[in-house]
Length: 346
Image 1 (tube, rainbow, N blue to C red):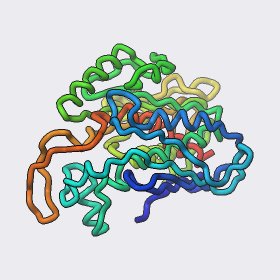
Image 2 (image 1 turned 45 degrees about the vertical axis):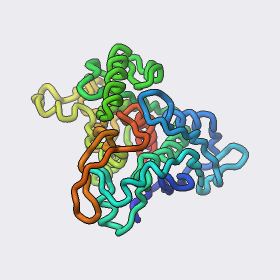
Image 3 (image 1 turned 30 degrees about the horizontal axis):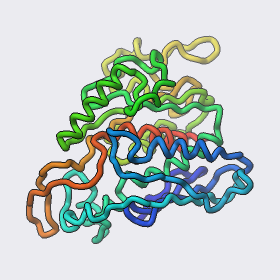
Image 4 (image 1 turned 135 degrees about the vertical axis):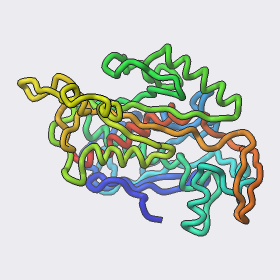
């Protein structure tokens, strides 16, 4: 299997499966002499880990990371950083019924056809549990560039949307609720809706908005390595992501050029920021902001038609512990991948 690495200068390679011994990664290209805050790395992992609230999967994993190399006396040495996160709460028997079946909208079918063999326990390598390794790498990347602020939040769940732009929100409220939405009234609506969906054995999607501040001018390498292209790749590599837009995004197609152009101030900043902080594939010093769309989780705790490996369509009742909505736990993953992408250009 190829495709397990992201980045070139700050390169992250992950390994492991959902129900194997654990997951982990190797980071190449981290500068030496960075004093790491290990507590903060754990905080980032805790934001992603399962079992943290009533609206996420109830799998209980401490997600405590163990660093194996590349760190001495609390500082990075400049050599490869190896780390490991044990799996402690697998319930592989929950997946015995799907050993010979392919669930709709999962990776089961394509993994089996591509590799001729698959780990059916929790999706194996295709499980979102792999993203815990990305969070570790992203947490370190954030500490390498501490002046840059990366803040993501849930801006919609289903058809419940935050109407205010990020500039009118208090983003410090994001972690004050289980949904990770800084609009507290909308957060309450979202949480109630997710609980209703969970009770029905169904799932729902949503959107995460990410805001990056204090980005220097000049990040990005035209023509094929544009900053927004790398951010797009980073986001689209996350499980369940179906769309990425930055700046004015698709709404910009409804505007005239005279409305959409970001006119300059004398200091090089712009009066508006429809460009989303990126022009010509290069950061212009304004805030970078983008949206990431997540589909509803494919596993439902209800009857669904599935395909067997013998070509039959049968009805199967979903089992296991799954998120009814992935976006609350995906907030730190979006931030992590944004940090990794940015550090590659620093």
